[in-house]
Image 1 (cartoon, rainbow, N blue to C red):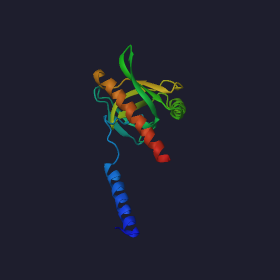
Image 2 (image 1 turned 180 degrees about the vertical axis):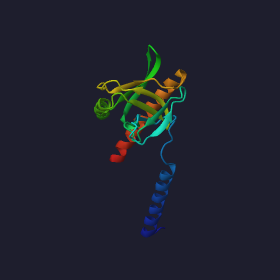
Image 3 (image 1 turned 90 degrees about the horizontal axis):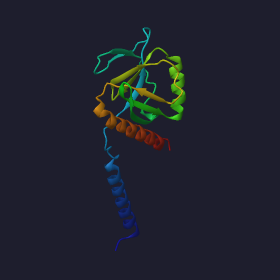
Image 4 (image 1 turned 90 degrees about the vertical axis):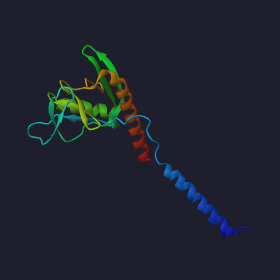
Length: 169
């Protein structure tokens, strides 16, 4: 028979082994391509920004180094049909909606640039303050890929906000 001390040691070893197996499994792999979206603003001549080039048109835009909106600010992304073709519509969180209004009010005339996984995919001139909480942007991505891209952006953003909420606890 085992002594009390041996049973306790055996139990501790078993518990430690189970804990290590749980840690070894790590975070669950995402079953979709991660699509990280960032929104940047066109830099003025006085700002030291980086240069991005849109993939199809080749338009070069100098952007400020600061990211204004990220995947944490997006509630969902959808594809919409407009008179000029298909575009992406980004719906923002409540907090980001307030920031979007201030951002567009103070940056009228500049272009907002959407960057996907580090690559600029679209830009749009800010004509007026945006109070709606969503942005409609034409992007330089083939229309056949937009539905899947919108789904992946929504999944990435939703998971990012969930992970951030768990980390705060």
